[in-house]
Image 1 (cartoon, helix red, strand yellow):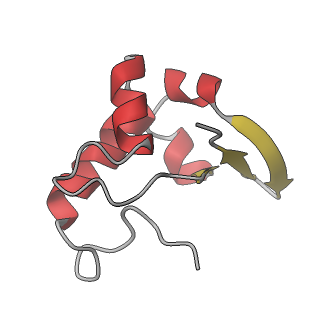
Image 2: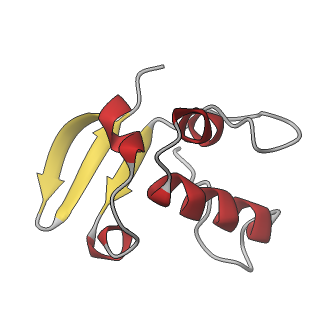
Length: 87
């Protein structure tokens, strides 16, 4: 199945690093930062690629990220938008 990059601090390996990377992604205007998280380059093993990104009320509170410009919106469910990343 599909896994989250960061979901919960107790259940996520390298939780602090991943939380910081996700927060940076949602707040950056730097395309290199956007791509680093989407392609897994912020970790040592580069074992994943992000396929979907959620934008809901909590993410909107972080501000607007230029990273969404590189994603394809695919569906809205209530107040959550789901985007797809096509690398």
